[in-house]
Image 1: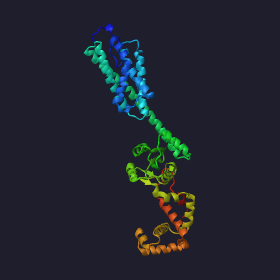
Image 2: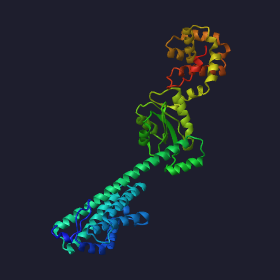
Image 3: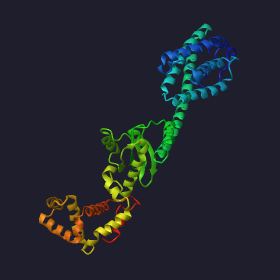
Image 4: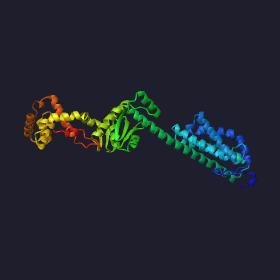
Length: 420
């Protein structure tokens, strides 16, 4: 600057590195209260997010931030009314970081706060330029002053951005923990009031229904985020995968969308249930997955008979022993041929043509084999209860051919160990 060094007081290091004449500080000290009001009024007028009056803790923080920013320019001129500039910088950075954290907490973006800073800088610069001209600052000095104003805006914007980012990360972690707690309660026998309280704490609005969906490990969070903001990641099992609780799967076109989202991943889609009964959906999903590891998306609805049959393996094994005992004296090949014919005959309610078409044999061959079955089974072949039991046993033998999940026996494994 062109003025004598004695007429200046050096500023501290940092973005505000110019020096100002003490005369400017005197003018600024007088103008400071009104300038703070002008800055706040301009922000309320030009930034829609802050159109409301600045009230409460937030309003007090914004007002203090404006006053602190202007006080730093007093410090540039070494005015005794200003605190030590280093202390001002430290206090200011924390204040602006807290403003950024506050924006994250109320769910606003950082854009509004940064726009407020720019508006405040413009209003403050206009007033500082006016005061600078009044005390005789040269054009070069005014340019340096403008640079200091906008460098300071960059400084406090960076502080607010850091606070905003840190708070977002903290909120995301808290939100994830609260939602995991909620999901665990939904899958437990916790009373409804406790689940509702956890939902309120997590900021989660219960949907009409939830569906449990088992997906491969490490994919759950991404799939839940793409499905719906109310989707929950409930658990992570190394053997079975991640269990998701997805809202409104049963709506029009929603199942097709879920299948597209899964993209062929091995998964199990449960039955929709009321949100507070989703543990029923989860239980059937886990049982389906344990009975046979899926290689693509599968619906629990398509495996209900398998689940019923496998519900009590010891009883089913004993039933197989009793009902298939008459086949024990046949050769393995002859036994399998007759059992295949019996399964088809029961499925087609005795229609020989349909059985022949399914098995690829002549109807007369079907007639001959059914004759053999009548000899082996006698009246059991006509008894509705016995026919139902035979159908269950033969269905179980077919289900046993499905691959089992790692470490899990197939649903019919116990029966297969017993002699037929």
